[in-house]
Amino acid sequence: MTPNLSLSRLEFCNFKLRTLLDFTLAINQNLSTDELLKKYEKLLRWKLNIGKVLIFANNQGWKCILVSGISGEHHYTIDVERDLMQYSDITSTAEYGNPSIKDFDIVLPIIHNNRPLAYVLVGDIDEEHDGISPTIKHMQFVQTLTNIVIVAIENKRLFRDNLEKERIHKEMELATEMQNMLVPDLSKFPKRKELDVEGFYLPHYEVGGDYYDVFELNSHEIGFCIADVSGKGISAALLMSNFQANLRALFVSSIHLTDVVTILNERVISSVKGEKFITLFIARLDLENNELRYINAGHNPPIYYDKKKKQIQYLKEGCIGIGMMDDIETLEEGYLTLENDSKLLCYTDGLIELDIKNKVSLRLKTVENAFCNNKNIKDSIKDMLEKMNIKKSNPYIFDDITLLGLDFWLEK
Image 1 (tube, rainbow, N blue to C red):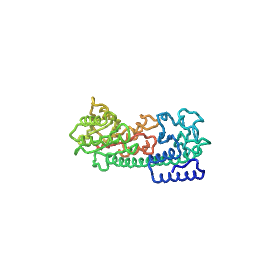
Image 2 (cartoon, rainbow, N blue to C red):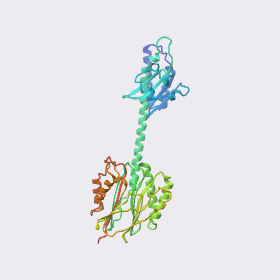
Image 3 (cartoon, rainbow, N blue to C red):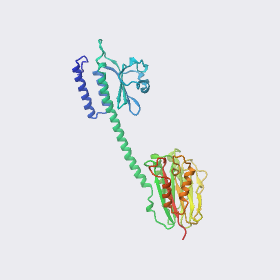
Image 4 (cartoon, rainbow, N blue to C red):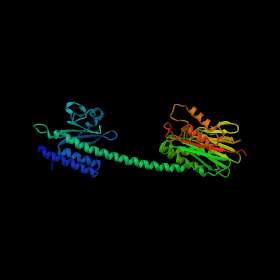
């Protein structure tokens, strides 16, 4: 029954209590945001005889969530920060003469924990001829009720956000597990007296765009590679998983490295349309002839160190990155004869490009000092990671970091 606003104070108090109880029950029944707003609109329009209602809510940015009894589009010109945030109490718009809100009578700010959650504009109030309108007198009740409704809507949003965050977290955990399956388990790599292999992988996020691989091509040839997708996160990880599948399918003993790189370039171009690219170092090691053939496609040059001669060499021959251009015009295959016990370090740029004042050249010098010695590859990488503080807790790391090291034992 619609209450008569001229009823006694006691009767109106009872009306307010019944209304608050009704809305509390509706919230406990988990009514949707739309249902709550319709219930609220019905109360203001048809029980409190308010002709116009406009609500702006702070839902990750100010948005208009209720427009009732308003014709035209004048209300679209209202800017919350400019026109409403100055109000902290129930205020008559006539006191300020703001033209943007001239079609309304009262501004009701909804403040929760010292933070504005919403602003309600009401207009065309049914006033009595004598004295102050009962609706205006009870506008604090409207403010209290609005606070309850807006907080309930905000709690629903936060609950949905938390559910979404939890869903994303679960998906990221699954993506991490799947990507970890793509990282080769070098402990299962066949043991050879001529070769030791060591790897390290540290994604900046849960998943990353770095990749390395080592596999047997035949009884005397080993294939290995390291790669880095431009960018980070999910998109880089998806592209890299697709790239790994293509490389694994292509890289067999009977195909030339130049053909592998050319086909990979075509497939990456087809997949990403030039929006991303991949730097790659790919090599074929012949253990019978002690020959290393490789192509460096825009990647950080791996470091080769001859332990007997104490000489260092950077492996640079190759081409531009994979996916940078439709056609690779210049493609060179590098060649290296292994004469003595030696080792090779492949790495991605995250190792030397930390967010600190040190220049890349100084970081690279640290890598050289830790690597260019007679230690085995496992100890060399361990020393390097310790000296450069390469771990998840380092705040200066802003990219994925991957290392692949090989020890070549030729001395009898």
